[in-house]
Image (cartoon, rainbow, N blue to C red; front, side, top):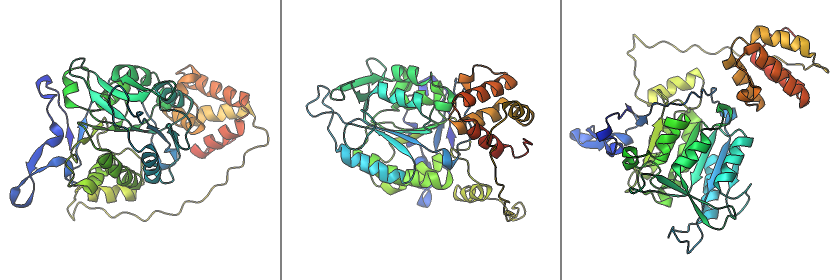
Length: 385
């Protein structure tokens, strides 16, 4: 179920609490908790960013845990940072991840500059943030409480500043999903002013999907959601279904309706899955076909494994000629760049042939021509060279 709220007078309502007579004896129950019709707020984005398909092998998470020091001037509650980090690691399982925190094994402190530095230098497809947050009726801003450059003092970050910096990232370095375990990061009241962080990441940055909190949420509820959410997301790729399934584990908590999904996806499919899994998910979502409409799923024929032999010396002239022949548009080139960890926008041109030439030159300069050959041949087995 996609909910689009366009009337300005209605944007401040708590639509995540919408109910319908779907319970026993037509009892009114929250639609947000109905697994047959996963619920999300559909937001139109002004961003021109186009993202490549997200597959399981592309998953990489940047985790930010900002624990305020005790006695801070904002009276933010200190929490168990080590316990939070450990819980997130368990939830992510084998998904590669980087931790920004103040304690334990980490790559740096949870500051805005460090967050943006990692997003700029690396390809993270998901971001998971655990921090305090708040909405100010006076300013109309939503705030995220990270730490300052020393990593010892609280640093309030305005959503406007975060969005301005995040949106400068090219699509290849822009996460395709964000999980904001931060209070009021999607407060509906903000939509009558400057907008909430969760909503603005979709609307202005172009992030395909964001889970954020519409009100205050307890650490216990947020942590309890994390593990089942990522487990289900990796299993079937449907972000809206994964959220409602995770909420089922905290069904009796007072803040079970606080997490909400904001998305520009029309079908909820964040991670691309195989056809058989898509059929299984459709069944879970309540998408039924009559027996006359249902078509049998053919057994997939085993694919013949093709060994790719990389030449000892890659001839750039021949490679350019074949790549220009088989890579027919920029979307295919962007996918190739994504697999190589290269930002397509950094090639400096939208001309297809010029972009291929620039990519080959960069790979040659970095002594990575064998990598380019292998990835190109993997995508386009019909390359004759």
